[in-house]
Length: 304
Image 1: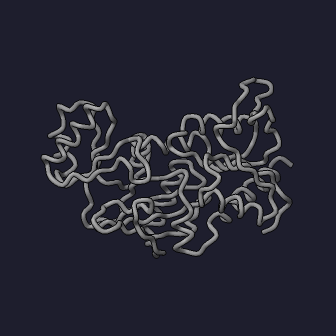
Image 2: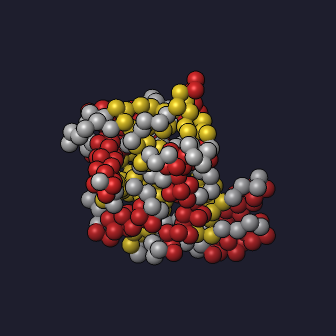
Image 3: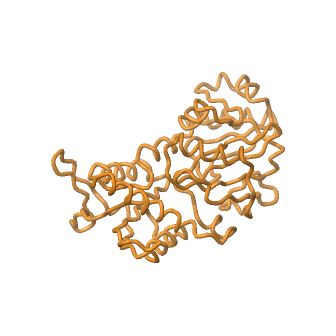
């Protein structure tokens, strides 16, 4: 759909990333004025009467209709501060700072999801290494997964195949003062997971990711492969409910198929486009731009 051009900023770190290039292209194809805003070049003026966003060299960014935040994990704190400031200036953001923040806090996110009735693998969290034995027992024993709370794209996720390996691993992380989750290993998932791409409360596409040989993590960045998959009504319900629970307008929802039905692994606030567009040949970046068009059209009709 062509609409009267909007001014849209893509708030991210790397203009060369496939996802970022595609979002820029999709916006331009629809007649919008797109600009890549490098997070490290933005700085803010906190002022109750006239908050301002400045860009390298002192330029004031005051003419954007919408911002698409694509915040890498290492920039979560600063990226969310910038996103929140754009919100304070009345700019529409495709994912709010609050939603991004809570999705990045893996423990808090899991608590929110289970409080909303979503099924997750049995997970344990403890502070003291003295409780390691019970922690392992709590999630059904080895093999089990140990996850760093700050990890992403499969980094900081380790499979412990025996009780001894699990104990060593958990205690090693504890000695580094790292916060970890201990999670049951769903063997029957067989190194596969499903990534559902949710935009504005709809699953626009789903792919099955299969781990590389000898690897249990299905992330594309880890050498995994992807193909389109037909999801069940229950998997669709879980994906939509998970994105809504996290308050994300755009989300990558990761699900695995267990013996007792689908289980939710994670909800990602800046899902990559390369795997899903490559496998489906679908214009997912275009879906994201359309979500902005619809939201701004709706906001306009409310204010008129």
